[in-house]
View 1 (cartoon, rainbow, N blue to C red):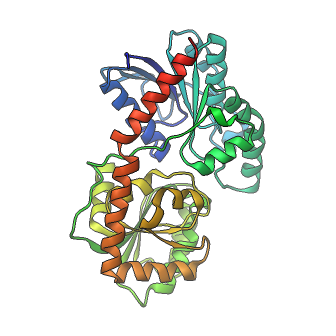
View 2 (view 1 turned 60 degrees about the vertical axis):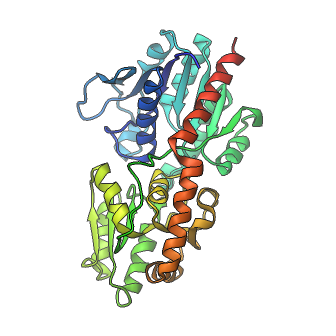
View 3 (view 1 turned 90 degrees about the vertical axis):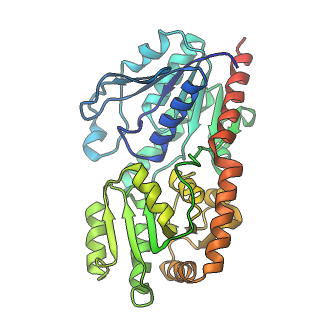
Length: 376
């Protein structure tokens, strides 16, 4: 394909923000620049980062100032960036690639693309993030109005899983507009090794939908039956609640919280640990799952449809929210060496077959080619 001028819009970009969505947008931009495309990423400015940044040849970042909104005081992050509309509309792009319909920045960039008669692709990174009742109600109201409008008016909608594709159809998106293309994982950085420690690892945001209270109850039930340590990596609004729960359950001596960790250290930790656990009550396609799969970890996870779709027969599943069942599944994962080898090897195979950049990037390139051809 010829060199393209790509406008990417995301509310969160690594390393400004640590998270699967942010990491994927960063790595995708870098790899597309390596292919010869010109990629400019527009994101919300945080913490005094520079407004303009050149990451590498062909990959530039513009951080735009957001305005304060009432939901900011309730920690409902949805940045409003008025200058984004003009920045997208007034430049000559081959296409606009926006990420997550839950954010105002996506809707504004789709509107700018429509007015500039440029193709717009919106990528869905899950639909609702479970929070308190007010945040949940606000998300649903936004999704069914502004978010649905952005999806219906996009040239194409990329869903990471078939489950998300069905939700998009329920929001009124034409089936012909939807492409199911997953996020990708770096198979070289996240790789397996034979020698591992009896250790359980969880990685992500400390938020309600991740099911960490269920995990802590399961660990408390197991503490007299296992020697493995548990490491929880990540930060978020439940930080104080979860550390207090661990103390109240008497498991602080075997559960370690690491609120920040370099990605290369995360990769090393996954390589060295036997079990990765994902006790979520709601998920899209989490990057941490793909990283654990690529690392050949034994994966214990709740039986959510998007997770089963990605992990298939490589997972050890339990019913979401059931701490006793999770405890038994973790014990089996730690003690059965044959299961560890079989499940870890299969997880790595699936990661190589479906989620490596050499698989995902050509799918996106083909989609871009089709979208641009349709507008001619």
